[in-house]
Image (cartoon, rainbow, N blue to C red; front, side):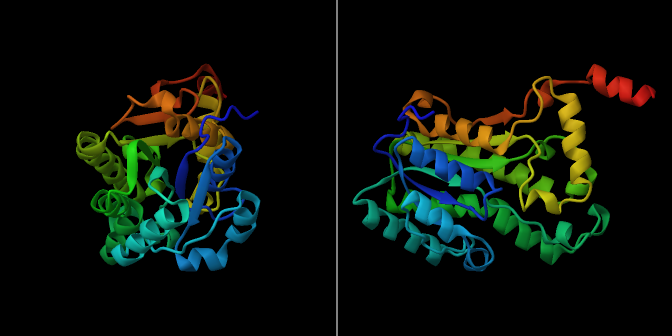
Length: 270
């Protein structure tokens, strides 16, 4: 059910690949809540995914942009403002990729060229996005930026490998840039630490099904779905959360603060 939480607002959604992605579901929810959006992804992802289907459903243009390219990002924000006829109110950063994870490289034997590439795509891309918007004065006063992260930034999940390091940097960038952008223009920047979610990207992590099952058993409310994450993201884009910034917000059914659940204990005792 829509509540017009984003009526009149305009935003950019990074990272929608297919119907399983959180960015895809967030794009749909933003439009349902009254927003106009621009969709973007790297050119290779646009070829692999189904973004044109989403664009049609949302009546949204697709502007290709490699988030590691300052030229592409400058073009994205400039063209988005031209399309909207003004500034942008919200941005979703849903970007992450580890070549080491894809190649099955263990954390104790990383390929450092892969690390650099993964850090640039998964973490520094947020800084690039924010720096571009900051210099262009592209985001409206009281605008909102949300980036998606995971609790592996705080806890060890062995097969998450160097993505955990990238997520730690992502969260740090959100805090640091959140201060500067808040002072400049009241723009708020937060990260959402979502439950393990069955997306195309997440499913590439070794033992991912085990992640999901364990988190479900540990979380008093169960795992948060991609649709529920989209709902939560919409609230952070809305005017009801104007004083929330520089936060890493756990959206995980209580997993992050549960030491152990009875269900896990019983499973271990069997």
